[in-house]
Length: 391
Ligand SMILES: Cc1cc2nc3c(=O)[nH]c(=O)nc-3n(C[C@H](O)[C@H](O)[C@H](O)COP(=O)(O)OP(=O)(O)OC[C@H]3O[C@@H](n4cnc5c(N)ncnc54)[C@H](O)[C@@H]3O)c2cc1C
Image: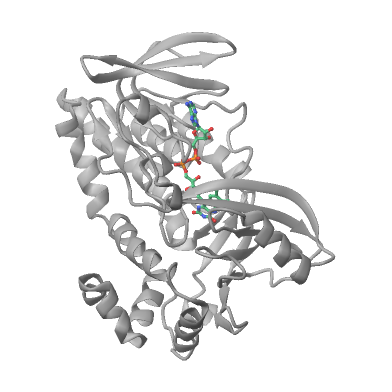
């Protein structure tokens, strides 16, 4: 690790890896500092991603694809099963990744492109001069060094502290942090190419429970209501997979709030979970992390080239991601999430039953939302202008 870079990236997850890779590809010097001793471990993720979303950044590789999904199912609170088949999706549904290897591959690609990487290296404080972020103090094996940078990209995930230290309010309202628990299980009978989502107040109040295939007869599951996710999950597992064996326990927090009010400051850009750009409806954030990481580095390169890394100049990044398909989806899905978490089971049953009668030609969250709105006219009144804009 050198003492000065054009771009210093805090965090070696998908956001940080894409930021560093893009920065060096743009001719900048960049370094990723990752506090954990190994990139990608421990995993705090169910590892699902849409096929098209993944292809935007990297070609799939069997070394880090655990399962390919060709269908999905939703189980309503009354037990009704709605199947979404691949025929509606032109075989493009999704992958379950193996993030231990996927995250490493992303960082490896950044390193191959020329980025420096330092593991077991924790950013412990920003270097600030006249209110401008100029780098970070990095702790490695008890030693603290100063690393200066033209731009610091905070990609330090849901637990993000760096931006707060720089004076930005990153607080997530307590009710908007989903506490999640996931088991990787072996020796269970599931469809190896289909994800299943369970809804309902008995299963996962204000959240959902999922089964993701992870290869032959293994699956990840998650449940959450902000309080006792593990109890709900244990109850489900006892009933559904009484003989299954849990081989991994994965707790984690997912923010389902709106993104930060502003994701830049003088000399600082905030990306991925640190910027709270997780999809509030699904809790998915891998794509959004890669998208914001790449965009941040592209804008950083432009601004460094022009010799202006002020908040005003870096705002281009903030404006662009908000105006993107991803930014608009976050805003829309926030409203949908707020609506759905307040619905009693009877309403959720009604919505799922009605959607199941449709011949969905395209498989996506947006399609589902549009159909939900179409078949539930009252929703238009409840969601107001947002619903009207989607019709
Ligand atoms: C249980 C669970 C299930 C999920 N399932 C899915 C899913 O199926 N699909 C999906 O798309 N998303 C899912 N997510 C969300 C997804 O994991 C995140 O959105 C994604 O990892 C965000 O990437 P990131 O790069 O922003 O942050 P992260 O992947 O969290 O990476 C941040 C990195 O920064 C490091 N770091 C933190 N602080 C410092 C510091 N001070 N100095 C140096 N390094 C630091 C951390 O160690 C970490 O490696 C899930 C999350 C949870 C908790």
